[in-house]
Length: 320
Image 1: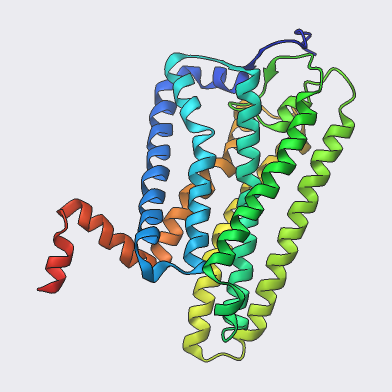
Image 2: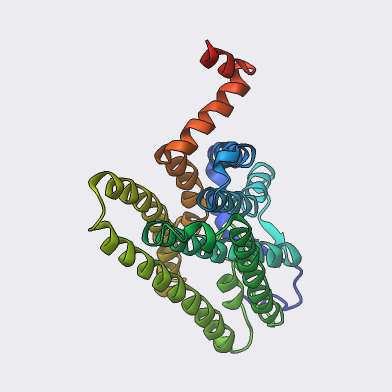
């Protein structure tokens, strides 16, 4: 074990050392991916914000999901790009803890948002007459902020416990900081912190899966009695959501797999790939899939894009 002082004020990110030989290629790829996430997600969020016809719970939740993707990407990509171009391999203890909190918040809030979206579709399809009263825009906004606040408080408390651990190493097998990377550096028995973090994640994960599964089972049974047109519309919406949720779950399973296999079993490059999957893939596909598969959203996004490109000529073209 590395015996660096437990008062060390910085950590060495071993993953960055692995990327050093091709740092300009990775810098270019990171810039392209981050620019795509920022641009496409921002355009969709702007369209939802500006267009009154999109001021509905489903679209508000899509905007929340995309904003969370921007938040998660921004907690990871900017520093990575700076580190690559400057050949830096270090991160300060304070930056590490902040990055840890931001990335964890992104992951937990992503699960929360997908769960709320599943419940929203359940109410819309299974209780259409009461839907407007049961889930108003105001209620959705309150639920979103409530989930974000609860998530942040829980993770902040877990981070406080991790920050209190005395550390006997300064090398992190990754290109960013996460909670488990810090726990494994502890000088003392960290099984309690490890168990607590695992318990919180497991409870949160199981609850979200149960609510989502309940919602879609109910939808499935209701769809059996709908007309063909209504059933196709409901299935289209559900498949879009499940596709995005599945992509995120695969990313989460990669991270779980990484820690189950242990630090010795896998090369650092594989560790990096498994770690970045839930941070990079979901924000890319969320914006792509919702932008393409959600018809009303696709039309409005196209409208605003053409307004930007053609300088407002889109409306004039359609009037003529």
